[in-house]
Length: 380
Ligand code: AMP
Image (tube, rainbow, N blue to C red; front, side):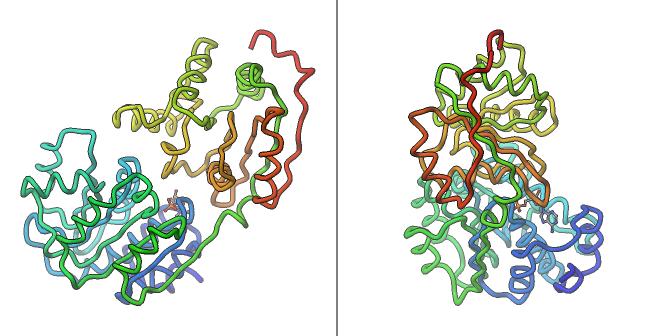
């Protein structure tokens, strides 16, 4: 089904065409008409599914019929778990707000940066994308009011709960008017998310997208059998010999991520780490440099990597395997998106082999194992 059949008006279709979206993704086909019809939506979908445009487009279209908001009384609220996601979702709102007959002002706010500039920018804002903590801070400053909100979006609700935002979320819900449309997106539907959906959603349209199963086939995978001590040289060998340009490397700990970056740097590879111990500013910068190609290698932990959107990521390397097969699929799902083939490389130590078998079984795909013992990695 083409975008033109989803009920979107001409200015949106023009921007969609300009963005090079050839056809709607499944979540968009299902969510856009449901949201335009005013229904609540429960979307089980991950980053990469196209869920953001799936709610941004219909929300902006609904605004075309809405009277102007009272100042500092936002009308749509999008709650997100991280600063990175706030920025990403904010940029999708900006993109589709181009050339609208009724202009709509949106703003992304998040913690870790000074609050004053954000308070100043709130003037005239009708759609707010916010992390829970910063939203509550702004409310405490009387910088904005939620009493006119008629659309609430919870994006990556599972991560919001994982990051311990329960209490903040409940305080925010309490400040919202009872009558509103609710859209909830989550990669998983665990017990806690279920409780929230029961509480918030009224007869939701349920949309479940499992991109990974169909997706994993698009990803070329290879595993290298390697001892722990030789992982660093092997990584540098692969990056240098295969001239890899944009590599996302996963480690299991902050400590390891820093160690890998340090070693890469001392060996002349431009790399940065992305993990929870880095300041918000450092995280955004690292992501920006990586996306623009100023650095070739980003070394990330699982938590920090959530919500990262780099559409054409060519290579992911599992320097250390994650404990859960789900995280493994999530990691490699960062490559080979939107029809492009990606490469996922896994380093497997002798101690990892049994665990790697479990991962492959869960994933439903067996990966070629390459023996590296005889490789001369001296000098890398
Ligand atoms: P999301 O899951 O919302 O983070 O989107 C993942 C990526 O897919 C983003 O880079 C979008 O720009 C891109 N995207 C979303 N919808 C489409 C579409 N219909 N066609 C092509 N790319 C899309």
